[in-house]
Length: 447
Ligand SMILES: Cc1cc2nc3c(=O)[nH]c(=O)nc-3n(C[C@H](O)[C@H](O)[C@H](O)COP(=O)(O)OP(=O)(O)OC[C@H]3O[C@@H](n4cnc5c(N)ncnc54)[C@H](O)[C@@H]3O)c2cc1C
Image 1 (tube, rainbow, N blue to C red):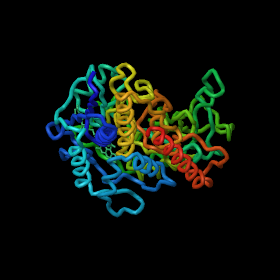
Image 2: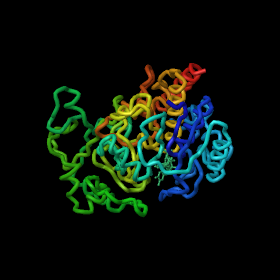
Image 3: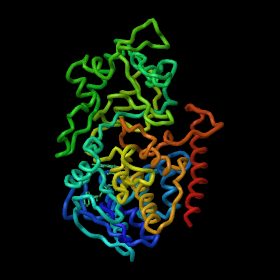
Image 4: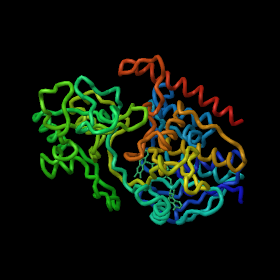
């Protein structure tokens, strides 16, 4: 069997994976369809093109999970962070870059590497032999998407991201909200109290509907909408169909008794479902939306119990090809049914340039080690990279799996540090200190 590594897709993840594997001494071929085949979002034939914003978000590695991920990628000699530093623009605490020179520099560095070659072609089938990483991103070409769906089962590959907002549990006001499953269904106490419920009076409901209807919304890109209306209507579209529609849909108040006020029947109830095994994150059930981010925060904080809600991610609906990774990938990011293929980047169900590049970094290292007969220990769950990969390969609930940004809700809790908003600064510093130590040890174990 060949000792070469083939990577399909030279975006954020594919570029980083190639760099890592090539630096470990592996010959790498990147198969990139652009510029021959275009996507609606990319504009150039460069590798690692930023399709929209020119920001890698916060660079604060003490108080911010994505800043911590930057730090980890720098420690691991990541090409994306290296070139971002070279083309950095002033942007306060954010790591923003001059996008074209950035992508050109990544492309030039990869092309100049003695172990890397680039083949400009669209691949349309899953490879039977050899070592492969598929990093074709949210806009994976249709033919390859079909080949992946054939292998994994169509229900395990999403083509749209209908994202409900996700809230940090410790920002919910439990004097108002309560835990209960509808009709107390479930075998165990945990199941009977699986949902977080936020009650609304008639006036609060009417004000909420008014705000939904008036909120700023984003528009779809051309060619983006096909297939999206199959059962994931945005809440604002539902409310446009009638003011009571939500009350008979995701906000129905039946089968629930307000534990904080049992005498009063709520007029409507917003339910939140646990989103991770740790129980630190909850998604608002059925609340996929095209409202702009600023409007979402305002409107969702009108929900009683969520008046101080902090969001791990906001809602959205857009074209996005991604796997149901918790069921399909093993903890080495290999497709369980075809372990010669790894997946990396946004197609694994992470979200964002940095997260995608980080998953490429990890996949590149894992693939190189496998080819060379080395074993890399699992990246610790306590690190940003480890928290993300643990989430996508098992920590997330497979039934409600949606792409995820890195955030502290994915980290195992710290002993002896208080929860809640007040202790946040100290807690985040605790997470990042612990992560740095563990990440350094993980890297050390690979030398
Ligand atoms: C419209 C849009 C806007 C976005 N805005 C942002 C943003 O502002 N900030 C942010 O952090 N993230 C944003 N994202 C998410 C962003 O795409 C990812 O964060 C990141 O680019 C994903 O990295 P990736 O390597 O997984 O995929 P990509 O960077 O998209 O790379 C995948 C590569 O695979 C290639 N490819 C696809 N199919 C094939 C095939 N069959 N054969 C060969 N090559 C193929 C593509 O041409 C592409 O170069 C946006 C996504 C979209 C779609």
